[in-house]
Amino acid sequence: MSNSYKYDLRGVSAGKEEVHAAIKGLDKGLYPLAFCKILPDMVAGSGDHCNIMHADTAGTKTSLAYLYWKETGDLSVWKGIAQDALVMNLDDMACVGCVDNIIVSSTIGRNKNLIPGDIIRTLINAATEFADMLATHGIHLHLAGGETADVGDIVRTIDVGYTTFGRMKQSDLIVNNIQAGDVIIGLASFGQASYETEYNGGMGSNGLTGARHDVLDKIYAAKYPDSYDPNTPESVIYTGSKKLTDTISVDGNEIPVGKLILSPTRTYLPVLKKILEVFQGEKRKAIHGLIHCTGGGQTKVQKFVQDKKVVKDNLFPLPPLFEMIQKESSTDWREMYQVFNMGHRLELYVDEKHAQEIIALAGSFGIPARIAGFVEPDNGESVLIKSPYGIFGY
Image 1 (tube, helix red, strand yellow):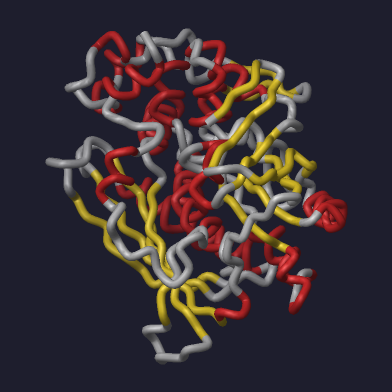
Image 2 (image 1 turned 180 degrees about the horizontal axis):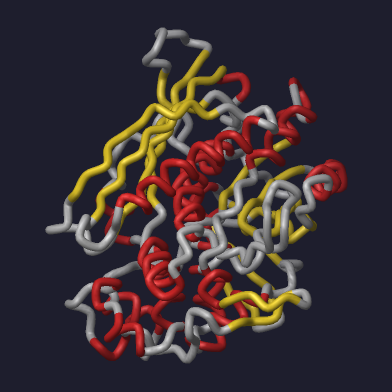
């Protein structure tokens, strides 16, 4: 059975083709190639400023947190869920240069019969702790509260989302203008950044439905029927061999499989804040593109280039998490690169003369970075990945 067919049976989509088709005719904002939609300044009507609003959730990662919490009683995994939902907003906004003074509102829908108040409290406190951490790096989030609704009739366990809003000078924007001759600086999604408290497997918040069902053992289907859609065919529910508390050796440490997949989505905000402080004024123009490799994985950039071929021929060695997912799922390698970030989740497109400076700035936060590839002219938009597992064109 192909992995694409399994996705369809599980009610998810790696490429969200129907969603993209539905929004195809919508206004793309002031700068169509910007990573986030840029709006005119609705706050003060300033022609020099712009507004950015973004909304996203932790997706089905909450279902895995539910499983792990039920099995172990470990409430701390819910802290990561708050970070997942926040980062999916904040790091997208950072890719247009918005790295400070961001208003945040939450929307949490839960099944009260399954999700107690302790989890809600943990999520809310985790958002505050995350904001406090970012403040030490000069990044200020303003938590505006939000809505927590008991909607058990439509939510099986819990859905955690945030909406974020920022206002900034248009002159400070990063608008993708990726050029032939640019090199790609990839920042690792795995390891332990200086502002993280433990090893990060690099998962992010994409591909979780597949990872959960392909990696975890069938026993969880019977134990926790609330963790999946009952309309899903039994043949694609929890088809892996791993228990949540089985361990995998990473850098000499034994990490539970469940916690490895649940690694909180790394934020690159502290790194980007520092990079943008260094690249000010005319130097800011040297950054031709910023791409957050979320939905679409290593092919994400294809939506933000024009008549370019993006060649990735020097990606990081495959982190243990993605190696485990591929082994358990037997997913085609071409599809792995299209679904998962596979080791780096942030890309900067710059002239090669700036590469080592950016790599050093990332390294100062304990985040490995490397020249992962380059850009060529092309008729149309394409991505070519040259990996140890094959050469794949998109």
